Length: 383
Image (cartoon, helix red, strand yellow):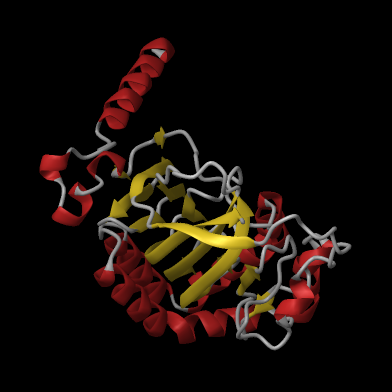
């Protein structure tokens, strides 16, 4: 009997795995996706799917930090769950029913709307239970912050309730240091982020002048998705100059998903004598990440972009209970000069989105969209 059960479980895994829609052909795609049809890659809920990860995350936040936060707050979660059940069993049951309905809805505007409604409907109930736990929030915030590498401890931001926290961080101007983005008070002057000025080189035997100007066309949008258990992930190109990725975990025992996609150009230079290029890019980034937890464990949602010159990351964490959503929309302009052999010459940008939730009624997700409406590369020639 034990052997038969094992075989049945294996068959179930194989059947479910084969139900995943790994990719879409051009004939099945909307027009904007058909233009980059071969890059479309969408994974929906099965037990496990993964493609080769060609878009490594640039986030400086180690995964073990989230794991350690979950372990730290586990006793608080257990105590709170018991309190909520005693305070109002009927309301607790109603929440569970609403959460089950939420789990049947595909990611999108309707799901976002219902999350907002659920948070408003049960917020007072959550506050009452939280107060009865008697948790020392100040002490827990210090412990959570202390789990981070020292250089990141000044970047964590806590919300007013439920130990909810987030990161909204940037790595600007070719720097390797992460900091709060420009709309925060501590963002440095651009000159402060540049590396030390090197010694003045000898006078060159020539001056640099502009040569041919190239307008890179996107020849590929390398997509990547990963999902485990109850989750959804999608990554694809949009039209001729955009990329989209999303990741969601459903309110089931456990879900984890990641998706990413990058834009690359195809410039072939005509003048081998010109050894440098001046790059100009105008970029539009639009992203959102959320996490929702009621009767489960920590939920984490992230979204980030990387142009090879600038990078930004938003990460939201609901470690015990509550709902939080963070959105970022910005226009980015880049101008820099590099050699033709630099890997960034044909690299437009990449985006990555992740979601992780653990617990029967936890949910996380993110959406990420990036366009490059203008991208020029000018040869710089020694004259």
